[in-house]
Image (cartoon, rainbow, N blue to C red; front, side, top):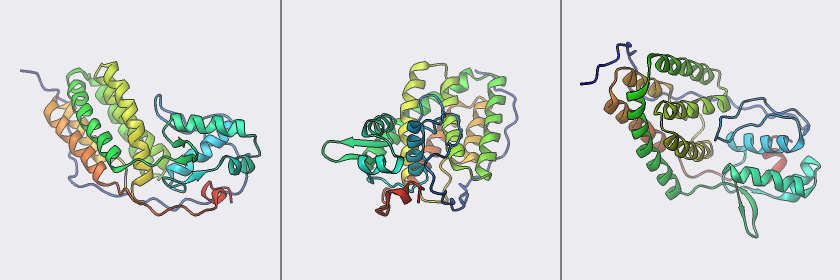
Length: 271
């Protein structure tokens, strides 16, 4: 019989809580403004560092999608982007290809680039795959995690909690994704880790596109309960908690939204 770890589990609330996001201020019209300097998690899309024009275009589109100014299916005409950023088509196409690689936009023949529009079936499949994969990951993490690993997870949860209460949504979302990827590292299985990176990337976009405003994409308390169960050596309990967590996240998504207006500059926060 496995010896349980003696770390004390903190009591956790039983209900999901909503954190209200304040309305995002509309930035002034200035294309050359430096992008937010946030680190990108390996294997996940995110704001890029740098002050070149390609980085500015990428970050502007990315942030507009993640804050729901650009809604699923919105067209991103090359000519309009060239005019807004005062660049050549070759530059815009390079950025659109990078955004397509990160699943932020879709490049469709004869339609050009549009903001990615995951279908209900695709969403169901992504979450179904995550539940199956993360159940195995959590069991392995429970087997392999050391006291130092548990302490590191708790510190990570503190950062997540602080970001949530500062209402810094991009950082909050990335820290929530980082928690799941950290568990995959603790599973000590690089193959599972690589597959989870792909699923978390796609899931993060779906949540950003479709989750109603004011909802917390990944509840801090639910993460904390998973860590408590791992610390206790309860692999089955941790797996059940993770499955419930991912089901709650899936059920929070509404796969219908009003379309954005027709002013691309305003949707990109540049008007």
